[in-house]
Length: 171
Image 1: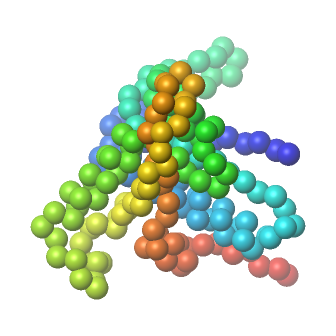
Image 2: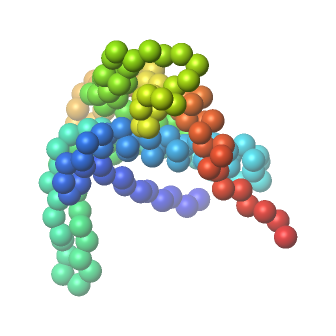
């Protein structure tokens, strides 16, 4: 039983356009690849993941004397960690603020665009589109009852990754 945790922060140390969309896209890429591994390996290995995401401001600082590390602090960090810890296995849980921001971005990109069979000509799919389904209200330590959503990969993301997925080959 090995536990590993990783952190992705977008827009740090300086603001970057679409940082929340880029982070959400990265989480989806990880989840699709982990789901592929789970499916491929079957019962030979037990693999689970939980992911969480929240948007907001953070404070960054270099801490430590002998081993210096850049760390992020603040309510946003705590909230994202709570989203991960209260998520179901093999799911990405996001706050309502995150879901609304992602969906607003999708709507903004669609504004005035004609959607037909050829979406390559519009820049909608560079980061997204996103599928956010309401999980419901859950109790979150330090926050009370919070509305959360599941972030799930769309068929577009799954299909895009088929050509990028690295496969191990046996010699």
